[in-house]
Length: 261
Image 1 (spheres, helix red, strand yellow):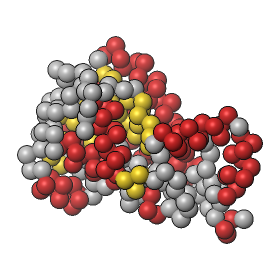
Image 2 (cartoon, rainbow, N blue to C red):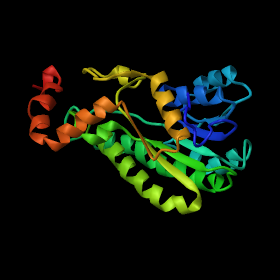
Image 3 (spheres, rainbow, N blue to C red):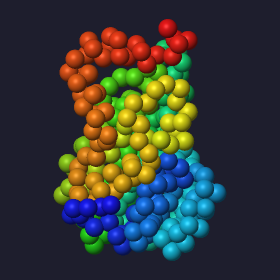
Image 4 (spheres, helix red, strand yellow):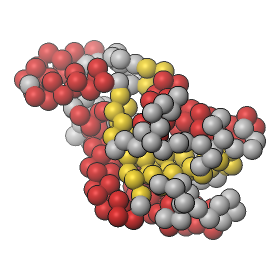
């Protein structure tokens, strides 16, 4: 793990949101095992405390609800209980809700964008003053999705929120570089997590959460700007973007649920 390191991921202080399950949880485990101090955030306090019990010297719990304005307002003062500096942030919190009726669902759009996009903006605003104090090259990594590469059935809210993340992270990369903060876009395909286990359709090139975490940690250590995986799915989606008739013809139609046809 972490081969060809330009940025050794050890003895750093890293804030991870979405740390109570899925990719965020596995990243917290892997980075804590490398003697980093992980500030683990999420809504599931019980899961975070169990994580802390596994790594009592390397995990501290900062639980809060991403959709609660009062929780956000209290974060700067709560951070002072743990640290006055950050070396890195991984914004891994995310949700997915599917639209059964593509012409409705405004509440779904609002919920998905609040967690996937606006919470990432708020995370950065909290983190920047602490990242600027890092004595090493600070980084901010946001988890987007390969769903931003092509349209999928019923994913209007999720895909649009992740496309917004991808564009926003690219802009921040330009603007934060002079301040010594390296911005990384993480775009996974299908990863075996509690979130994806709810899917009722085939998930090509599905990989384990352990493999996903290893790819992400290696990419951060190599100081990459973009971490996209698995590559075979990326190239499939890029080919379909170049040939939209192929995508919107037989392929996209096959992904519809039986009751939608």
